Length: 68
Image (cartoon, rainbow, N blue to C red):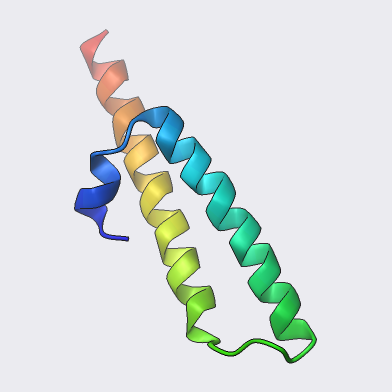
């Protein structure tokens, strides 16, 4: 997921996406532990997507603080 796509989402959509990605990361780690993971690079992609969402959420939070 690109940062531009993430910036277009609302805060509720970002939180929902974050929950989905964390669940996917849990499942990927579990599959990796039992040697059933087909694409190990997917773990790093999901981690980066989570970081992107956290960054956008923080930017929005700081932007709201500056406007007050």
